[in-house]
Length: 284
Image 1 (cartoon, rainbow, N blue to C red):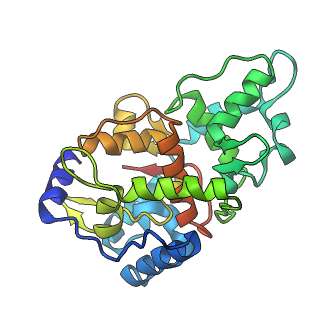
Image 2 (cartoon, one colour; image 1 turned 135 degrees about the vertical axis):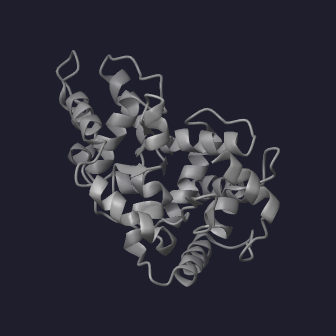
């Protein structure tokens, strides 16, 4: 993958459509999704939750992926997550008791700005808040392991529902704009942005890899990656992936749950409005 990134840096990063800094989020969304409709006209909106597997350029590998999904490699991780989710804390409470309707249907709105608390809410932060409110220590590793397993269980409670991020306050829009800026800004020694791979070069095959489309990108996380499995830590939250991408363009990765990564997550999830959640997923 590092060779792929270097190659992209050489072939150029010209933007495929003009990005208007003054556009409203609604205008951004319409233009963004129309771009992918035009680029991949045979791919329906709801199919983008399959990531790169949905793209026509990946068709030759899709059959193998479908066979793999008959017995997904992440099933054991789901079982571990469900055990964690259902095991009562020392005080007898459970994670489900911390969320309205036990968490059902809530994941599609994350992250969001909590007007009452005056801060952004993420699933990872709310799970840790649930723990501390019930006398438990917060989970420190926010990239993989138990936190990733818990996020899978929480998001699975909304599987099949369309992403529905709400930007219903000036504060939420301000965070969105920061995420938008981060997404399109070039960084690192290779001078590349998130859009370089997942907008301009989405679907391109270079050195045997196919780059996924940004549309629907966050709808499958946490994911089980073959690359991560080889290192013994197969699961990863979306912020783990953000950090990995930063490293690949030779930029310093930020800490998971940093303000910049939360803003980026908000932007990405808003761009995937109406794409159904499908968690977990398997990726290369």
